[in-house]
Image 1 (cartoon, rainbow, N blue to C red):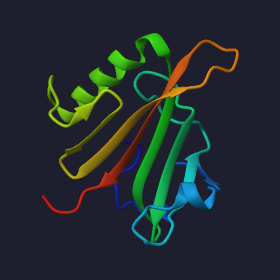
Image 2: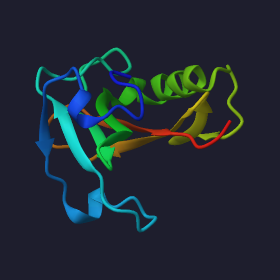
Image 3: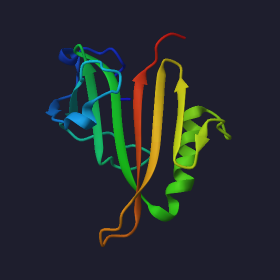
Image 4: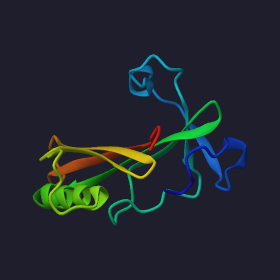
Length: 140
């Protein structure tokens, strides 16, 4: 994480630029106000050892409340990389709540939800998109 949850937007030490999201992609499903999302102007930090395709810092009421990141992986290694990343995030070698294409968990006061989705071929080598969302967890 590049900033702790709860950081005020105005106190961010990172240069950020606003990212406009389509309404459907921006909804959080709970009817809460849509957060304002930003991307680091200097480029995102590495995610699972690769440069992310997307890295968003989302603020609700001007406080960091969610981080979204995604990266493309080669199709042949995506499954094992995803399983290893989920196990590491969950702090176990055999996560109990994991499927081949999703995992969820909590690390202290941070909740995460990760997904692996195959991308349709576009003339380039087959790939899969690994995406994760990090949220501030409520309570212990």
